[in-house]
Image (cartoon, rainbow, N blue to C red; front, top):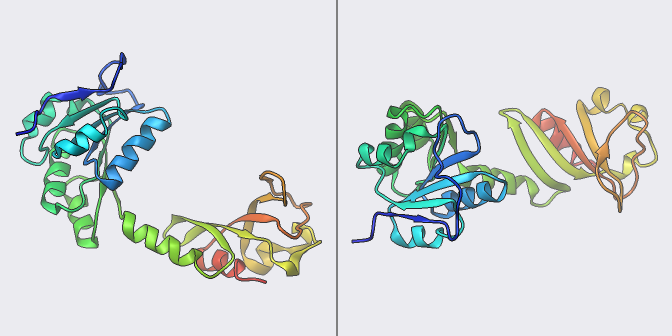
Length: 238
């Protein structure tokens, strides 16, 4: 049986995460590919992370990467979560994916503890609906969302794509040749294409805010916002 004790980060002198009201601390349960990646990235951008997983190997693998890691079965014992300080967190992420029952039970337990912001990974839409019903405030579908994103990047001029709402997206694309040498005001993007250019990256330069006087040229990269179909249609111009 693996040791259930926490494994503190090497030479770590920071306080243990989990004091309610501190927004820079996050609880991540499930340190697989998704949960582990989220936990490490949170640490990289300045958060303190308490990671939990039932698998001893995953706990050991993240011992030096996270503020603190704990080996525990979070789906079976809400009291264990309470003793580990889970109730003190304002933000929790459930990264459990393959064990749907454990994902649901863990999310429900976090909700019972009163955590105000619970993010949970879902593998199917039915899984996601159940997570919402048992207390998840945000449900994410990593595989589904990445599939949609990749589909939009393949075979076109779309460099990157990000959905802001169900029918609104930001698209990074190269400027179409038919618009070279003209200002955004002359082009009339909103009137003719129903999109807005948010910023422009001229060839060899950095991104800058777009203005009515911005002239488009060969090699320019644009970030365009608008209804998803309109923004994607603009990216197909040649």
